[in-house]
Image (cartoon, rainbow, N blue to C red; front, side):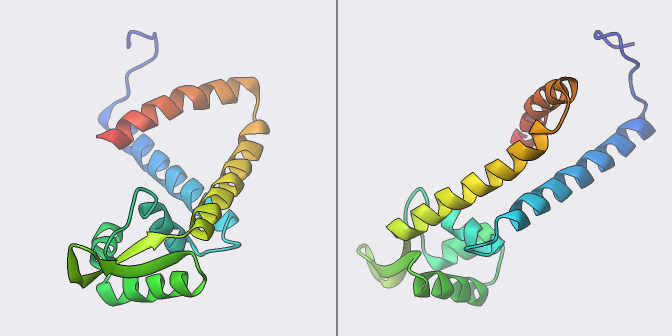
Length: 148
């Protein structure tokens, strides 16, 4: 028994629980991303979010997003064509280009996040008080796991 009075899980149980949690997190993540793809595709949203703290080079974005440089160049080009980012010369190195969010890009980020939060809040709102309390505890635990 654990200090909470529950039975300790054996290695096989921990393995099964880990797999179930991984799959559930992946499915929820996918659903949240797909429920809010009205303005930008999920990969474009991710790039906009990376630029929120300041400009980056396309190479840095490609490295962060784990995609090829040509793929990131296409993504940045589409975002620039839509007015969500702008490209300009790096003042410290004229050979490099910096990509920066525009006001429209920032607004798109905010709208997309609100849609994602609304989708999740609707699903959580359908749960019982007990289920919501369980999720509250689980979210704290999952945040600790994600931080490692």
